Length: 204
Image 1 (cartoon, rainbow, N blue to C red):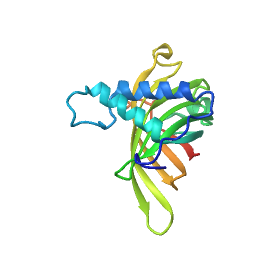
Image 2 (cartoon, rainbow, N blue to C red):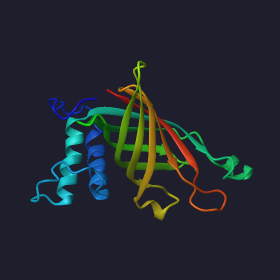
Image 3 (cartoon, rainbow, N blue to C red):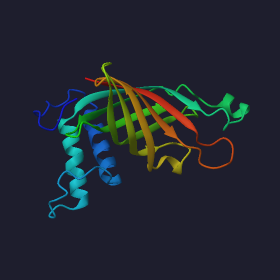
Image 4 (cartoon, one colour):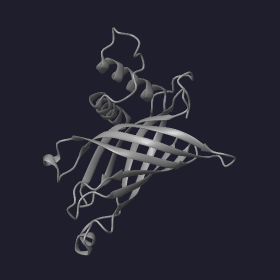
């Protein structure tokens, strides 16, 4: 990780990086939640500020590989029959950029595809912000924050992307973290929400 004062990194050699870059930038700009990079300058619109900030994260951040493997469904939320039907091996792969900002916190843009609970592809692209808390004398750090993304699933809106905000947490080193995103229970009815997605992020 590095701050915005460090030199711009060289262009990624990954052939899929431009596609993920465009998706992540579009998601971040559309959701318009990134802190404004030039909020004091009135000549910029909120849209332009967000685009500039997202571009700065992508251009100055370190490349990161995302690996997914677990989607844990709450045992008290789902019936035994439903749990037997659902997939909890959420294998997936993603790529993004993470920037440690001047406040010592992490801002990320990412694109990600995983196998969802019904074994169909689930596509995600978005922005994440984590406040970072070093764990004294261990080299480890705890991250707490949230992510806002555009998600596409076959069982929602005929695969049309829709916005999703989720709480986010992580633990690990600056370069390698185990991360957790939580989908809350959406109603008092059984068999919805209450899913913990566990994945890893490795910076390169």
